[in-house]
Amino acid sequence: MRWDVFCRVVDNFGDIGVCWRLAADLAARGERVRLWADDVSALAWMAPHGAPGVSLQPWRVAASDAADALNCDLTPGDVVVEAFGCDPPEAFVRRMAMQATAPVWINLEYLSAEPAAERHHGLPSPQLAGPGQGLTKWFFYPGFTATTGGLIREPGLIAHQQRFDATSWLHRQGISVQHGERRISLFCYDNPALPSLLDELAEAPTLLLVAAGHAARQVQQELGPALARGALRAVLLPLLTQQDFDALLWSCDLNFVRGEDSFVRAQWAGRPFVWQIYPQHDGAHEAKLGAFLDRFLRLVPPNPTGADAFADNGVASDIRTLWRRWNGLSDADLALADPARWRRRCEAWRDSLLAQPDLTEQLIRFATEKRP
Image 1: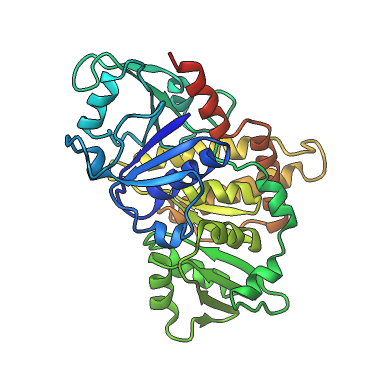
Image 2: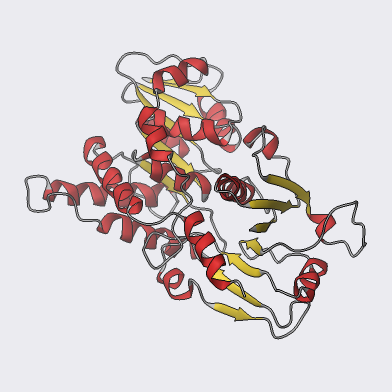
């Protein structure tokens, strides 16, 4: 099928990051994809080599009523995906409504563990007015359960990770690891809890690998030119491709991530991770964070009646406290959970997700079923 994926870049890189992964994964499975975006500048470093089967198109062209539209074919494809409710241009929606066979119109929603994602996944939204009158838009919710649309996971991702050599990858980045150092990655928004985190990490030999942007600026302000404090030393990373960002997560013992794309990739890494959710002025992010923690920490350990059962409950409490502190929802002391038990929990969580079909597979099946 031919897919038109629409993306508006609100801020940061999450919107275009998710849309690019989806577009590239669709194309790798034999689909043809046009990615319409209002700002593709981040792809210059995120995906510098593009992807076979994916063509980038400027949003303004899709919004054009001109017949030639800069020599671009404006005929809608078989499937139109609007990411995160971005609303395709009215001119393009009018063309959708004019097709003899209407395209399947899908609103790919934000990832959420809240119950509403399960209730609303797959529901129709008939368009009763406006340029798309007569069409039906379908809600498609990514998620963590069998009654949602799953998570983006390329075929062979886990096998690739299992073959991955962290030492070689770090060496290619010019990063040397000293004996006994734990490796921690940091990708965050502006965060008032960062000084407390650096103090905590300085208590034990730590190599902190800092992503470019907000994280690098804050670490430089706190640690100064030496980029060191106590037993902690930091390395500032350049902007990484999506593949190299995955490799960074695989190379570390603990990953601090933010937003949606890196949040999902941290879960596939199977390493301990801390998520900084995108803050919302109305406080909706607290409920969203709590919904994920409730689901993630409810996972039954492999041996719930064994000697580690109580300790596993303890590490769950430590994880919840840390995540809330990192997201500014608690005044508790910032402390890391027991790494071995934390990792076992993350691996068990990943295994539970691997039992479900991935998002792209489900999206293709959904679109195929809804085609007239």
